Length: 375
Image (cartoon, rainbow, N blue to C red):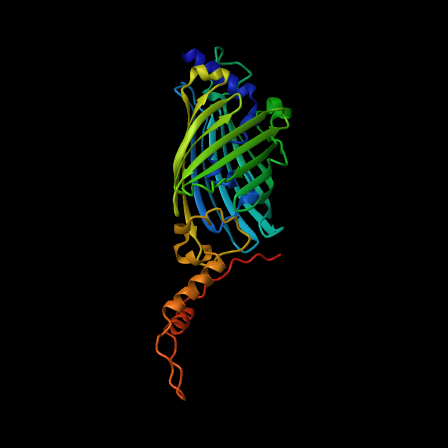
């Protein structure tokens, strides 16, 4: 088994080339869409902090692919969003750490849909340590038995079209494709690998059952080196709190996921079963996600109010979810119930309505603001 593990380590680390591990595989993008595109930074009316951890090929006796990413993003104005991302991943002799600062500019195109453009310059630190490889000949010139490092600047670009129930994102990762000063024996192949992603997320709410919602999603990825990946998924959400679902990554894996999306806390877990040729040698993949939402006292505009249907998620602004006509109707009914039965005497002043006094008093305490869209 040790010989087999060493062989796998060499094959996947060397022949997959360094660029094969440039973009880490994370499946938590339904809980944090900024993983997919910088244009999704700040599209929600709250700040979100998230951490994802992924471990692949459980049960395999080699240094398995694993990674952790941390992110924070928020709207900073009615049209601007900001995000910070940190990623650390490793696989065998390869390690990568990256830092990214993303900015997104969003603008409405009609009453329901918005466009968002994002850019995220980033710096990556990569290392290649072939001293971990056990060779038959210690003096093999192919391996230097040292750790080589490289720093490279690159960027992510993206554009998103979104409404309350729809999100479509097109992004390019490692858009510059800078060369890496690592493994000097093969400079031509050592460069960042450009990855193009197309992502979609939808929410379908049955009219006959307000407790259930269906959220299909897809992710299509392509690289300049001819690698393609297609992932589809479906989540069933109960009472806007608990979700369970499944996913399928074509010719690679399928799995299930479950979690909680509360007002201020998100917890998710996903387990995958492999379907590729390597699946006979490992048990599966694990991914965990935990996130927190911090709601702003002052709402920004042109957001994707994806959680607007959650009446309890905006307790201090519950009046925003009531229709204007219903508010006026309730007000008239209340005034009619509170209308005094006594009539004014001739020549005297009319008694003031209690309902009017109460409405006047309440208007001084709280004035609900409307959700505006600046076209």
